[in-house]
Structures are given as structure tokens and as C-alpha cells.
Image (tube, rainbow, N blue to C red; front, top):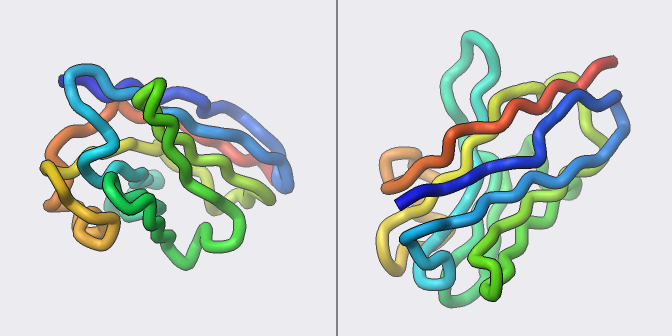
Length: 126
């Protein structure tokens, strides 16, 4: 199983970008898939997730209203577009997939993540 994350980069405050996470050896439409982030010196925290069977979504307060997680079943890929980026969004972003039939609510707990991607760095300059 492999989760391949991409889309990070250096952007300016106010810009937008879209992170992608593609799964290999794991099907995304039967489990929750989401994103966590880890800023320097801080713990890894939940950002957003989407349930596999219902497409219900959830967000942290830090990105709510600035992001809309989605999934393309034909590509087995989850996307996390982020708008109006702020310097405090600077972090390494990790995609994660839960166990079979997990929901986005369950994946908010980092201990519910079964598979992890390699991380992609997002740097937002002021």
C-alpha cells in the first residue's frame, strides 16, 4: 500500500493551491481519507477528511471555509484545495487513510489512520 501526496510548494499569503493524494493498493471509496499537517515544533493535527461511502466531509476550524476536500473514484485520488493561504498554514501536509468503512469523524483521531503518505511541504510567505 502506498499513498502518494503532491501539490505542496512555496506560495504567498492569499494564494491558493491544491494538494493531491493518490492511493495504490488501497481503495479510497470504502474508507475515510484525509489530511493532517505538522508545523515545525508542533504536533501533527487534523485538517480535513472525507468519508468513503457517504462523501461526508469534515474540517478543522483552521481551514473551514477555505477548503473543500473531494475524491475522484476513477483516479483513486483525494484532493485538498486551499484558498486564502496564511503564513500559519505553513506545514508538512500528510494524507492518511483509515481502516475499511471508517468515517471522516473517526479519522479526526490520528490513531485511526492506517496508512500514511510521505508528506508534502507547504510554505506560505507573508
